[in-house]
Length: 435
Ligand code: KIV
Ligand code: ZN
Image (cartoon, rainbow, N blue to C red):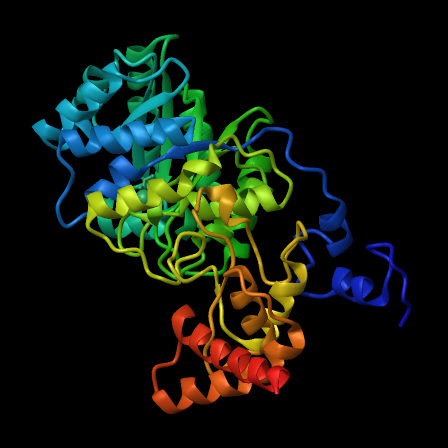
Protein backbone atom coordinates (compact mmCIF):
# COMPACT_ATOMS: atom_id res chain seq x y z
CA UNK A 1 0.00 0.00 0.00
CA UNK A 2 1.40 3.38 -0.97
CA UNK A 3 0.49 6.61 0.75
CA UNK A 4 0.44 8.96 -2.20
CA UNK A 5 -1.74 11.98 -1.58
CA UNK A 6 -2.31 12.66 -5.27
CA UNK A 7 -5.82 11.40 -6.12
CA UNK A 8 -5.88 8.53 -8.54
CA UNK A 9 -2.51 7.07 -7.72
CA UNK A 10 -2.94 4.99 -4.56
CA UNK A 11 -3.42 1.23 -4.58
CA UNK A 12 -6.90 1.76 -3.24
CA UNK A 13 -7.75 4.01 -6.15
CA UNK A 14 -6.13 1.57 -8.59
CA UNK A 15 -8.22 -1.24 -7.09
CA UNK A 16 -11.35 0.81 -7.46
CA UNK A 17 -10.59 1.74 -11.03
CA UNK A 18 -10.28 -1.88 -12.02
CA UNK A 19 -13.06 -3.24 -9.83
CA UNK A 20 -16.11 -4.81 -11.37
CA UNK A 21 -18.24 -2.20 -9.64
CA UNK A 22 -16.88 0.76 -11.52
CA UNK A 23 -16.06 -0.91 -14.84
CA UNK A 24 -18.21 0.40 -17.62
CA UNK A 25 -19.14 3.62 -15.87
CA UNK A 26 -15.99 5.64 -15.45
CA UNK A 27 -12.87 4.89 -13.51
CA UNK A 28 -12.67 6.34 -10.02
CA UNK A 29 -9.70 8.46 -11.02
CA UNK A 30 -11.63 9.74 -14.03
CA UNK A 31 -14.56 10.67 -11.80
CA UNK A 32 -12.27 12.65 -9.50
CA UNK A 33 -10.89 14.57 -12.43
CA UNK A 34 -14.05 14.81 -14.53
CA UNK A 35 -14.69 18.38 -15.64
CA UNK A 36 -18.16 19.63 -14.77
CA UNK A 37 -20.77 19.51 -17.54
CA UNK A 38 -20.58 22.59 -19.77
CA UNK A 39 -24.24 23.48 -19.39
CA UNK A 40 -25.72 24.53 -16.07
CA UNK A 41 -28.71 22.43 -15.03
CA UNK A 42 -32.11 23.61 -16.28
CA UNK A 43 -34.67 23.08 -13.50
CA UNK A 44 -38.06 22.17 -14.96
CA UNK A 45 -40.45 22.13 -12.06
CA UNK A 46 -43.30 19.59 -12.09
CA UNK A 47 -44.89 20.38 -8.70
CA UNK A 48 -48.00 21.93 -10.25
CA UNK A 49 -48.55 18.95 -12.54
CA UNK A 50 -47.09 15.65 -11.22
CA UNK A 51 -47.20 16.98 -7.65
CA UNK A 52 -50.71 18.31 -7.92
CA UNK A 53 -52.19 15.26 -9.66
CA UNK A 54 -51.12 13.09 -6.73
CA UNK A 55 -52.54 15.27 -3.95
CA UNK A 56 -55.51 14.12 -1.90
CA UNK A 57 -56.97 17.54 -2.60
CA UNK A 58 -55.62 19.06 -5.81
CA UNK A 59 -54.90 22.79 -5.59
CA UNK A 60 -57.35 25.49 -6.58
CA UNK A 61 -56.29 28.45 -8.72
CA UNK A 62 -55.30 30.65 -5.76
CA UNK A 63 -53.13 27.92 -4.30
CA UNK A 64 -51.53 27.19 -7.69
CA UNK A 65 -50.78 30.88 -8.11
CA UNK A 66 -49.10 31.01 -4.70
CA UNK A 67 -46.89 28.02 -5.57
CA UNK A 68 -46.20 29.47 -9.03
CA UNK A 69 -44.98 32.77 -7.53
CA UNK A 70 -42.83 30.91 -5.05
CA UNK A 71 -41.27 28.94 -7.93
CA UNK A 72 -40.42 32.23 -9.61
CA UNK A 73 -38.84 33.40 -6.35
CA UNK A 74 -36.86 30.17 -6.18
CA UNK A 75 -35.67 30.90 -9.71
CA UNK A 76 -36.56 27.74 -11.63
CA UNK A 77 -36.07 27.91 -15.39
CA UNK A 78 -39.27 26.10 -16.36
CA UNK A 79 -42.67 25.33 -14.83
CA UNK A 80 -45.08 22.64 -15.93
CA UNK A 81 -48.29 24.41 -14.95
CA UNK A 82 -50.61 21.43 -15.40
CA UNK A 83 -52.38 18.99 -17.66
CA UNK A 84 -54.67 21.48 -19.40
CA UNK A 85 -57.03 18.94 -20.96
CA UNK A 86 -57.70 17.01 -17.75
CA UNK A 87 -60.50 19.31 -16.56
CA UNK A 88 -61.83 22.88 -16.87
CA UNK A 89 -60.25 24.08 -13.65
CA UNK A 90 -56.88 22.77 -14.81
CA UNK A 91 -57.28 24.54 -18.14
CA UNK A 92 -58.10 27.83 -16.39
CA UNK A 93 -55.09 27.48 -14.13
CA UNK A 94 -52.72 26.75 -17.06
CA UNK A 95 -54.18 29.67 -18.96
CA UNK A 96 -53.98 32.14 -16.08
CA UNK A 97 -50.48 31.16 -14.96
CA UNK A 98 -49.27 31.50 -18.56
CA UNK A 99 -50.61 35.05 -18.60
CA UNK A 100 -48.55 36.07 -15.55
CA UNK A 101 -45.39 34.15 -16.48
CA UNK A 102 -42.13 36.09 -16.60
CA UNK A 103 -40.33 36.48 -19.94
CA UNK A 104 -37.53 34.07 -19.16
CA UNK A 105 -39.45 31.08 -17.78
CA UNK A 106 -40.58 28.16 -19.95
CA UNK A 107 -44.23 27.28 -19.32
CA UNK A 108 -45.45 23.84 -20.25
CA UNK A 109 -48.68 21.86 -20.27
CA UNK A 110 -48.79 18.09 -20.52
CA UNK A 111 -50.84 16.20 -23.13
CA UNK A 112 -51.03 12.62 -24.25
CA UNK A 113 -50.17 11.99 -27.89
CA UNK A 114 -53.69 12.95 -28.92
CA UNK A 115 -54.43 15.96 -31.16
CA UNK A 116 -57.46 17.05 -29.12
CA UNK A 117 -55.39 17.23 -25.93
CA UNK A 118 -52.51 18.93 -27.71
CA UNK A 119 -54.93 21.58 -29.01
CA UNK A 120 -56.18 22.25 -25.47
CA UNK A 121 -52.65 22.50 -24.09
CA UNK A 122 -51.72 24.99 -26.77
CA UNK A 123 -54.87 27.03 -26.25
CA UNK A 124 -54.09 27.20 -22.54
CA UNK A 125 -50.46 28.23 -22.71
CA UNK A 126 -50.00 29.99 -26.04
CA UNK A 127 -49.89 33.41 -24.38
CA UNK A 128 -46.92 32.54 -22.21
CA UNK A 129 -43.71 34.26 -23.31
CA UNK A 130 -42.03 30.85 -23.68
CA UNK A 131 -44.72 28.19 -24.21
CA UNK A 132 -43.95 24.49 -24.47
CA UNK A 133 -46.26 21.61 -25.34
CA UNK A 134 -45.24 18.46 -23.51
CA UNK A 135 -46.32 15.16 -25.07
CA UNK A 136 -46.04 11.85 -23.27
CA UNK A 137 -46.33 8.39 -24.82
CA UNK A 138 -45.15 5.02 -23.46
CA UNK A 139 -42.10 3.37 -24.98
CA UNK A 140 -41.24 0.33 -22.83
CA UNK A 141 -41.88 -3.11 -24.37
CA UNK A 142 -43.97 -4.08 -21.34
CA UNK A 143 -46.29 -1.07 -21.61
CA UNK A 144 -46.59 -1.26 -25.38
CA UNK A 145 -47.68 -4.89 -25.11
CA UNK A 146 -49.79 -4.81 -21.95
CA UNK A 147 -51.20 -1.30 -21.68
CA UNK A 148 -51.27 0.16 -25.18
CA UNK A 149 -51.74 -3.32 -26.70
CA UNK A 150 -50.29 -2.12 -29.96
CA UNK A 151 -47.14 -2.59 -32.05
CA UNK A 152 -43.84 -0.71 -31.82
CA UNK A 153 -44.36 0.52 -35.38
CA UNK A 154 -47.67 2.10 -34.39
CA UNK A 155 -46.00 3.71 -31.39
CA UNK A 156 -43.42 5.34 -33.64
CA UNK A 157 -46.14 6.56 -35.99
CA UNK A 158 -48.06 8.09 -33.12
CA UNK A 159 -44.97 9.80 -31.73
CA UNK A 160 -44.14 11.30 -35.12
CA UNK A 161 -47.67 12.49 -35.84
CA UNK A 162 -48.29 14.02 -32.43
CA UNK A 163 -44.94 15.80 -32.18
CA UNK A 164 -45.19 17.09 -35.76
CA UNK A 165 -48.72 18.31 -35.02
CA UNK A 166 -47.63 20.10 -31.84
CA UNK A 167 -44.70 21.60 -33.69
CA UNK A 168 -47.04 22.98 -36.33
CA UNK A 169 -48.97 24.76 -33.55
CA UNK A 170 -46.07 26.25 -31.61
CA UNK A 171 -44.22 27.47 -34.71
CA UNK A 172 -40.96 29.23 -33.96
CA UNK A 173 -42.27 30.86 -30.79
CA UNK A 174 -42.78 27.76 -28.72
CA UNK A 175 -41.21 24.38 -28.05
CA UNK A 176 -42.25 20.75 -27.99
CA UNK A 177 -41.03 18.26 -25.43
CA UNK A 178 -41.46 14.54 -25.92
CA UNK A 179 -41.41 12.13 -22.98
CA UNK A 180 -41.00 8.40 -23.55
CA UNK A 181 -43.01 7.19 -20.59
CA UNK A 182 -41.50 4.20 -18.73
CA UNK A 183 -38.10 4.82 -20.28
CA UNK A 184 -36.58 3.35 -17.09
CA UNK A 185 -38.26 0.02 -17.95
CA UNK A 186 -36.99 0.04 -21.53
CA UNK A 187 -33.79 -1.89 -20.84
CA UNK A 188 -34.92 -4.84 -22.95
CA UNK A 189 -35.87 -2.55 -25.86
CA UNK A 190 -33.33 0.23 -25.47
CA UNK A 191 -32.69 0.33 -29.23
CA UNK A 192 -36.36 0.97 -29.72
CA UNK A 193 -36.29 3.71 -27.08
CA UNK A 194 -33.50 5.42 -29.02
CA UNK A 195 -35.57 5.07 -32.19
CA UNK A 196 -38.57 6.59 -30.42
CA UNK A 197 -36.59 9.63 -29.27
CA UNK A 198 -34.98 9.98 -32.72
CA UNK A 199 -38.47 9.87 -34.25
CA UNK A 200 -39.58 12.67 -31.92
CA UNK A 201 -36.53 14.71 -32.91
CA UNK A 202 -37.20 14.06 -36.61
CA UNK A 203 -40.73 15.38 -36.09
CA UNK A 204 -39.35 18.56 -34.53
CA UNK A 205 -39.12 17.91 -30.77
CA UNK A 206 -36.91 20.45 -29.01
CA UNK A 207 -36.40 18.41 -25.83
CA UNK A 208 -36.55 14.67 -25.20
CA UNK A 209 -37.40 13.59 -21.69
CA UNK A 210 -36.27 10.22 -20.26
CA UNK A 211 -38.50 9.36 -17.29
CA UNK A 212 -37.91 6.77 -14.63
CA UNK A 213 -41.68 6.58 -14.37
CA UNK A 214 -41.40 3.82 -11.76
CA UNK A 215 -38.15 3.45 -9.83
CA UNK A 216 -37.40 -0.27 -9.66
CA UNK A 217 -33.65 -0.82 -9.96
CA UNK A 218 -30.25 0.72 -9.29
CA UNK A 219 -29.56 4.38 -10.06
CA UNK A 220 -26.49 3.13 -11.94
CA UNK A 221 -28.66 1.21 -14.40
CA UNK A 222 -30.85 4.20 -15.21
CA UNK A 223 -27.87 6.50 -15.49
CA UNK A 224 -26.15 4.06 -17.86
CA UNK A 225 -29.30 4.07 -19.99
CA UNK A 226 -29.31 7.87 -20.02
CA UNK A 227 -25.67 7.85 -21.10
CA UNK A 228 -26.33 5.28 -23.83
CA UNK A 229 -29.25 7.28 -25.25
CA UNK A 230 -27.33 10.55 -25.01
CA UNK A 231 -24.47 9.02 -26.97
CA UNK A 232 -26.81 7.54 -29.57
CA UNK A 233 -28.71 10.79 -30.30
CA UNK A 234 -27.30 13.80 -32.16
CA UNK A 235 -24.76 15.74 -30.12
CA UNK A 236 -26.82 18.88 -29.58
CA UNK A 237 -29.96 17.04 -28.35
CA UNK A 238 -31.47 18.56 -25.23
CA UNK A 239 -31.84 15.61 -22.87
CA UNK A 240 -34.17 15.86 -19.90
CA UNK A 241 -34.75 13.39 -17.10
CA UNK A 242 -37.69 12.93 -14.80
CA UNK A 243 -37.32 10.46 -11.97
CA UNK A 244 -39.66 9.05 -9.34
CA UNK A 245 -38.69 8.09 -5.83
CA UNK A 246 -40.35 4.68 -5.35
CA UNK A 247 -37.24 3.21 -3.72
CA UNK A 248 -35.90 6.46 -2.29
CA UNK A 249 -33.09 6.95 -4.84
CA UNK A 250 -34.49 9.60 -7.17
CA UNK A 251 -32.09 12.29 -6.02
CA UNK A 252 -29.10 10.04 -6.72
CA UNK A 253 -30.51 9.11 -10.11
CA UNK A 254 -31.11 12.71 -11.10
CA UNK A 255 -27.78 14.01 -9.85
CA UNK A 256 -25.84 11.30 -11.67
CA UNK A 257 -27.91 11.74 -14.82
CA UNK A 258 -26.82 15.37 -14.91
CA UNK A 259 -23.22 14.20 -14.96
CA UNK A 260 -24.13 11.76 -17.74
CA UNK A 261 -25.59 14.14 -20.28
CA UNK A 262 -28.97 15.34 -19.01
CA UNK A 263 -29.37 19.11 -19.03
CA UNK A 264 -32.97 19.49 -17.98
CA UNK A 265 -33.82 18.09 -14.56
CA UNK A 266 -37.49 17.65 -13.75
CA UNK A 267 -38.00 17.96 -10.02
CA UNK A 268 -40.71 18.86 -7.52
CA UNK A 269 -40.92 20.98 -4.40
CA UNK A 270 -40.87 18.85 -1.23
CA UNK A 271 -40.57 15.84 -3.56
CA UNK A 272 -44.32 15.86 -4.20
CA UNK A 273 -45.59 13.62 -7.01
CA UNK A 274 -47.08 10.25 -7.84
CA UNK A 275 -46.68 7.52 -5.18
CA UNK A 276 -43.40 8.20 -3.28
CA UNK A 277 -43.08 11.39 -5.26
CA UNK A 278 -40.83 13.01 -7.81
CA UNK A 279 -37.20 13.93 -7.34
CA UNK A 280 -36.83 16.53 -4.62
CA UNK A 281 -35.69 19.89 -5.99
CA UNK A 282 -33.79 20.98 -2.89
CA UNK A 283 -31.79 17.78 -2.54
CA UNK A 284 -30.70 17.82 -6.19
CA UNK A 285 -29.83 21.52 -6.04
CA UNK A 286 -27.67 21.26 -2.92
CA UNK A 287 -26.00 18.00 -4.00
CA UNK A 288 -24.98 19.63 -7.30
CA UNK A 289 -23.86 22.76 -5.47
CA UNK A 290 -21.70 20.66 -3.15
CA UNK A 291 -20.11 19.10 -6.26
CA UNK A 292 -19.09 22.52 -7.54
CA UNK A 293 -21.90 22.95 -10.08
CA UNK A 294 -23.18 26.47 -10.51
CA UNK A 295 -26.88 25.92 -9.74
CA UNK A 296 -29.18 28.64 -11.07
CA UNK A 297 -31.56 28.71 -8.09
CA UNK A 298 -32.10 31.07 -5.20
CA UNK A 299 -31.13 28.70 -2.38
CA UNK A 300 -32.12 31.13 0.36
CA UNK A 301 -35.80 30.63 -0.59
CA UNK A 302 -35.67 26.85 -0.07
CA UNK A 303 -36.65 26.65 3.58
CA UNK A 304 -39.60 29.05 3.37
CA UNK A 305 -40.71 27.32 0.16
CA UNK A 306 -40.76 23.94 1.89
CA UNK A 307 -42.97 25.30 4.70
CA UNK A 308 -45.35 26.96 2.26
CA UNK A 309 -45.67 23.84 0.11
CA UNK A 310 -46.25 21.65 3.15
CA UNK A 311 -48.98 23.99 4.37
CA UNK A 312 -50.72 24.23 0.99
CA UNK A 313 -50.46 20.51 0.20
CA UNK A 314 -51.29 19.36 3.71
CA UNK A 315 -48.35 16.96 3.43
CA UNK A 316 -46.20 17.23 6.58
CA UNK A 317 -42.43 17.37 6.35
CA UNK A 318 -40.83 14.32 7.97
CA UNK A 319 -38.52 15.60 10.71
CA UNK A 320 -35.62 13.64 9.24
CA UNK A 321 -36.25 14.86 5.67
CA UNK A 322 -32.88 15.89 4.19
CA UNK A 323 -32.20 19.65 4.37
CA UNK A 324 -35.68 20.78 5.41
CA UNK A 325 -36.60 18.36 8.23
CA UNK A 326 -36.96 19.96 11.65
CA UNK A 327 -34.43 17.65 13.29
CA UNK A 328 -31.69 17.40 10.66
CA UNK A 329 -29.54 20.13 12.19
CA UNK A 330 -29.55 18.61 15.70
CA UNK A 331 -26.59 16.75 17.22
CA UNK A 332 -27.05 14.63 20.34
CA UNK A 333 -24.24 12.12 20.61
CA UNK A 334 -20.99 12.96 22.37
CA UNK A 335 -18.65 12.05 19.51
CA UNK A 336 -20.62 14.09 16.99
CA UNK A 337 -20.99 17.04 19.35
CA UNK A 338 -17.23 17.10 19.89
CA UNK A 339 -16.69 17.15 16.10
CA UNK A 340 -19.33 19.84 15.66
CA UNK A 341 -17.80 21.99 18.39
CA UNK A 342 -14.30 21.69 16.93
CA UNK A 343 -15.33 22.52 13.35
CA UNK A 344 -18.14 25.02 13.88
CA UNK A 345 -16.02 27.92 12.65
CA UNK A 346 -14.74 26.09 9.56
CA UNK A 347 -16.34 26.12 6.12
CA UNK A 348 -16.56 22.31 6.23
CA UNK A 349 -18.17 20.93 9.37
CA UNK A 350 -17.30 17.43 10.56
CA UNK A 351 -21.01 16.55 10.64
CA UNK A 352 -22.45 19.32 8.46
CA UNK A 353 -23.45 18.35 4.91
CA UNK A 354 -24.86 21.77 4.11
CA UNK A 355 -24.93 25.22 5.56
CA UNK A 356 -28.37 25.82 7.08
CA UNK A 357 -28.11 29.55 6.36
CA UNK A 358 -27.57 28.82 2.68
CA UNK A 359 -31.10 27.45 2.33
CA UNK A 360 -32.62 30.14 4.52
CA UNK A 361 -32.98 28.15 7.73
CA UNK A 362 -33.13 30.51 10.67
CA UNK A 363 -30.83 28.34 12.82
CA UNK A 364 -27.54 26.55 12.22
CA UNK A 365 -26.18 23.42 13.96
CA UNK A 366 -28.17 22.67 17.09
CA UNK A 367 -26.54 20.88 20.03
CA UNK A 368 -28.97 19.16 22.37
CA UNK A 369 -28.21 17.37 25.65
CA UNK A 370 -29.40 13.81 26.26
CA UNK A 371 -27.93 10.80 28.06
CA UNK A 372 -25.90 10.22 24.86
CA UNK A 373 -24.19 13.60 25.05
CA UNK A 374 -20.70 14.61 26.16
CA UNK A 375 -18.94 17.52 27.81
CA UNK A 376 -18.57 19.41 24.51
CA UNK A 377 -22.35 19.68 24.43
CA UNK A 378 -22.52 21.10 27.94
CA UNK A 379 -19.74 23.53 27.10
CA UNK A 380 -21.34 24.71 23.82
CA UNK A 381 -24.87 24.95 25.20
CA UNK A 382 -23.86 27.02 28.22
CA UNK A 383 -21.29 29.13 26.37
CA UNK A 384 -23.83 29.91 23.63
CA UNK A 385 -26.28 31.06 26.30
CA UNK A 386 -23.71 33.51 27.68
CA UNK A 387 -22.33 31.48 30.60
CA UNK A 388 -18.63 31.65 31.40
CA UNK A 389 -17.90 27.93 31.71
CA UNK A 390 -14.62 26.13 31.08
CA UNK A 391 -14.31 22.76 29.36
CA UNK A 392 -13.17 21.28 32.64
CA UNK A 393 -16.27 22.55 34.45
CA UNK A 394 -18.39 21.20 31.60
CA UNK A 395 -16.69 17.84 32.17
CA UNK A 396 -17.77 17.94 35.84
CA UNK A 397 -21.34 18.89 35.00
CA UNK A 398 -21.86 16.32 32.22
CA UNK A 399 -22.24 13.19 34.44
CA UNK A 400 -24.73 15.01 36.65
CA UNK A 401 -26.86 16.01 33.67
CA UNK A 402 -26.53 12.56 32.13
CA UNK A 403 -27.86 10.98 35.33
CA UNK A 404 -30.80 13.38 35.41
CA UNK A 405 -31.57 12.68 31.78
CA UNK A 406 -31.46 8.90 32.36
CA UNK A 407 -33.28 8.80 35.67
CA UNK A 408 -36.01 11.24 34.76
CA UNK A 409 -36.69 9.28 31.58
CA UNK A 410 -37.28 12.52 29.75
CA UNK A 411 -34.30 12.33 27.40
CA UNK A 412 -33.45 15.80 26.15
CA UNK A 413 -32.85 18.42 28.84
CA UNK A 414 -33.92 22.03 28.36
CA UNK A 415 -31.55 24.96 28.71
CA UNK A 416 -33.26 25.89 31.98
CA UNK A 417 -32.70 22.42 33.41
CA UNK A 418 -29.04 22.52 32.38
CA UNK A 419 -28.61 25.99 33.84
CA UNK A 420 -30.21 24.95 37.12
CA UNK A 421 -27.51 22.31 37.65
CA UNK A 422 -24.79 24.67 36.46
CA UNK A 423 -25.95 27.33 38.94
CA UNK A 424 -25.77 24.75 41.75
CA UNK A 425 -22.14 24.00 40.86
CA UNK A 426 -21.36 27.69 40.68
CA UNK A 427 -22.96 28.26 44.10
CA UNK A 428 -20.93 25.45 45.68
CA UNK A 429 -17.67 26.72 44.23
CA UNK A 430 -18.56 30.27 45.37
CA UNK A 431 -19.11 29.06 48.93
CA UNK A 432 -15.89 27.04 48.81
CA UNK A 433 -13.97 30.06 47.64
CA UNK A 434 -15.51 32.20 50.40
CA UNK A 435 -14.64 29.70 53.13
O1 KIV B 1 -43.52 9.86 -14.65
C1 KIV B 1 -43.68 10.11 -15.85
O2 KIV B 1 -43.35 9.32 -16.73
C2 KIV B 1 -44.31 11.38 -16.19
C3 KIV B 1 -44.27 11.81 -17.61
C4 KIV B 1 -45.43 12.65 -17.97
C5 KIV B 1 -42.98 12.52 -17.88
O3 KIV B 1 -44.75 12.09 -15.32
ZN1 ZN C 1 -43.91 11.58 -13.35
